[in-house]
Length: 191
Image 1 (tube, rainbow, N blue to C red):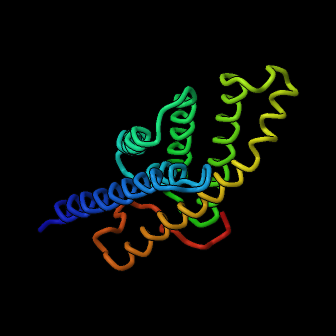
Image 2: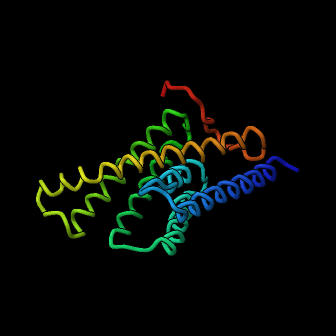
Image 3: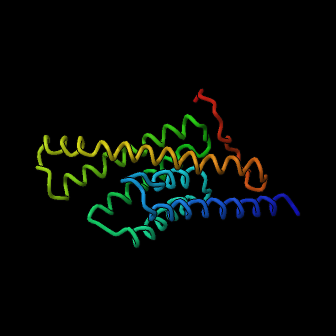
């Protein structure tokens, strides 16, 4: 086999494994869990960081989210939720060539914060219950702080699981290694 064939087969196997991991993470979302402690944010970050095909990196997590929503249910804020997860994919894409523990931690934090800001703004703007004033917006954000904690905890836990599992699998199975010139996940904090 020539190197191009080996590279192509490696990319296919790697992509299949990553997509399976994302699908499994999406399936976990429909299981009982504390509010906002889900794998979806981490799943979107992971997709952006490791899926080579940019279109697939953006579309597959959205398709997985939509499939889960069929079971979980739809609501008025879904466009904002989906937009927020597209931001997560973009954040993952931003670290794709420099995946270190520090950078993944940073985008995980940024992803949770942007989800909180976007969706709570939507709660204030679209749903009943909060006066449409600056004080009402602040009160809505304050009321949502426990959900921010759960979002961050879920994103951090599942980012650790997804990125950690892939890193371990890459060490055990060389065919899964990214053959493009990108840095492996490392614990170096000098980013």
